[in-house]
Length: 168
Image (tube, rainbow, N blue to C red; front, side, top):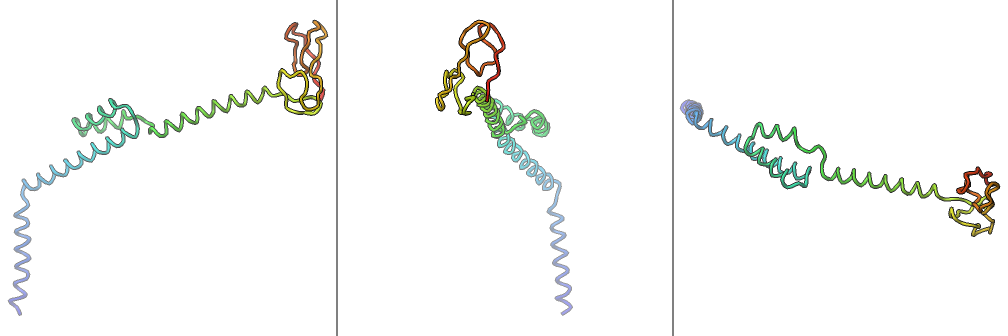
């Protein structure tokens, strides 16, 4: 029994001795070379994916990848400084929002150009001479120059005379 107990610690001691003998400067150096190589490849892959999401410019994509590939530690930091701030999808969304705001302003301007009949409040065109619903006459004569003007106008376009307000 004592022989078995002594044999087990000896084998463990021998294993740890052999393991420490296997760890040399060359193996330690090789481990770090492989580790740095994997990190380098990972950074190149990450920059490739990031720049393709941030820009559709092929030249910018190529230059970013080459910058990180050739000047790895410094190149990666430079890329983080100069990379485009917006992702392409966000740029498209902001352009869509901008276009929608322009359309909204156009619609609002056209809505402001709508006029209503003073008698029945039906929606009418600015140039209508009579209401299509109630047949109310929308024209009047300017008191100063005598030209025919519409009731919804504030001033006579011919003589700039202020016209009486329309009745509701």
